[in-house]
Amino acid sequence: MLTNETNITIVRGKKAWYKLLFPFVCFCIALVILWDGYEVLNTKSDVSTIEVILGWPFAAMLFIILGTVFGMVRDYHFDFKNRRYKIVKRVGIIGFGSWKRFQNLEYVSVFENPETNFEINLWYDSNKHFFIDSCFDSKAAIKRATHLAKQLDIEFHNGMTNQQFVVGDISTAFISKEKTKVDAYFTQGNRPFWHTVIAGACFTLSFVILYMVFLEIELLNQRLRSIVNSIELLVMLMATGVRFSMVNDYLFDLENNQFRIIHNIGPIKWGKWRQLAQLDYISVYQKIEGQFQINLWYNTNKRINISGSNDFANALAIGEKLAKKLEIDLLDASDPHNSKWVEMA
Image (cartoon, rainbow, N blue to C red; front, top):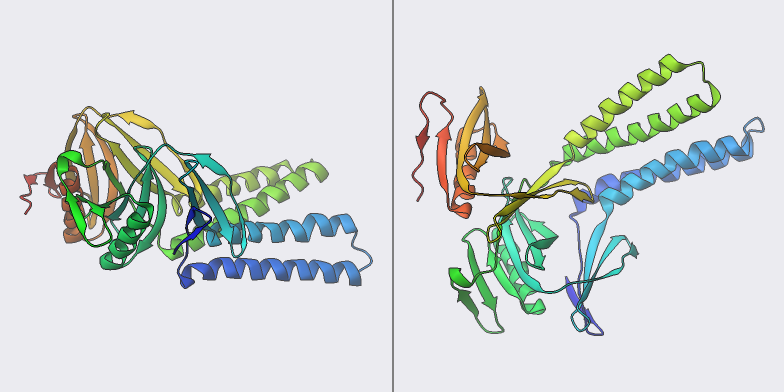
């Protein structure tokens, strides 16, 4: 939803109701833990205040953090007069954010990710972007994106057709390919909800074990074997949490011959630009029986694993979409002894 308040345009974020179930459960558990600590403090005389403070609030804080991370939405505030923006990270009615400068708002885009969800992104300062929302239906995504582009007075890019438009009050004008500003961008999409739950549980247990390890080091220095075992379990849980939560975005700045892989774990993002001499082709490769990888080959002999699928037809369809978007060839390498180029419509 988009509103205007004192010449500041606000794009309000939202989440589907089912994505709020996990944070709701986390906040409920935190309340139960705090209430239990309160009752213990008032009913048992052999429990010290320090033990209660170190125990129950710490455990509750872990669930509050999880609920905040997975329940957070983002509102985008744009002050065009002063050329600045603010991302307000909000949980319910509680939010925070600070103003930052921008040079130019570029366009709003809709891209289909490998999970066939349609992502809406707002691009600024050439190759930076905000994730706005995702939709299951392309028409709904395009409708919201064009409305946003019209309100912000910027262009709209349809990533499914690689076409760019100026959105007016009455009609939409097509922009020729030579004048478009869009760079190639695609993402692995969102993790399945059950992946998010597993990752959240692993990270929560990791924090609990870390807390217990610190207590053992402080109080029971002789229990080194127990501490070492706890650290091993901590590393395994953290690695599992990262495995089930990380999503990669791929951004290509073709004008400057560079690309960037953006790694995302919840609100944490990182990645650096790499040089790109040339894009070669997309390949669909069968790693093991029944598992297919979609790879992007570049700079002659380097590759990026973009996505994967257990179904060959689906993997080939994803590869064809990516090849068309990047305007390169598609290689069917599912049979290593009989690789063949795929003719695309």
